[in-house]
Image (cartoon, rainbow, N blue to C red; front, side):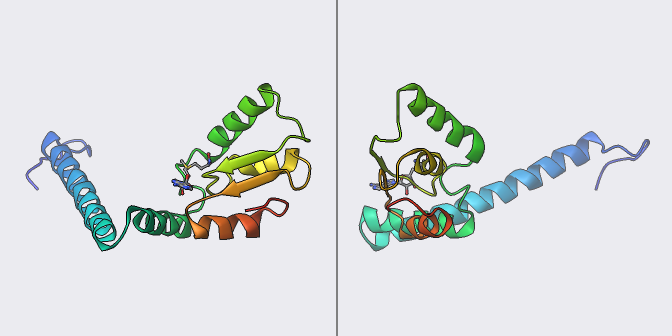
Length: 137
Ligand SMILES: C[S@@+](CC[C@H](N)C(=O)[O-])C[C@H]1O[C@@H](n2cnc3c(N)ncnc32)[C@H](O)[C@@H]1O
């Protein structure tokens, strides 16, 4: 370290060094991801690669797997369709339902059997069936 401590705060030099270390760590993480996804995409079809990618994300964190902001985005989709007039007797086909950030609201609202969710990720569908009875996946 080249900084001089006079008041317990980080010197400018130390701040720059810690920013560089942080950004280097980020770059190494991104590089590892790129290598992993390149390997997926080289090994088979796009659909297989994307399925493996999504399955991995769901296994790590089902709520973040589909993009995060679980409550906000789920509620926004719910409010949007309710305002568009979605009623319990309607039928909803949710293509790319993921881990039901929005779908769980619709399953509760719709009459039994009126929600169908599809996703490219079998892990997402397994998670949905286990966490939210009442839908068809
Ligand atoms: C951004 S997430 C949205 C999930 C959910 N609709 C929500 O709003 O919470 C997109 C979802 O679409 C799925 N998906 C992407 N391409 C797909 C495809 N070709 N067929 C089925 N699902 C697909 C992904 O696996 C992912 O779960």
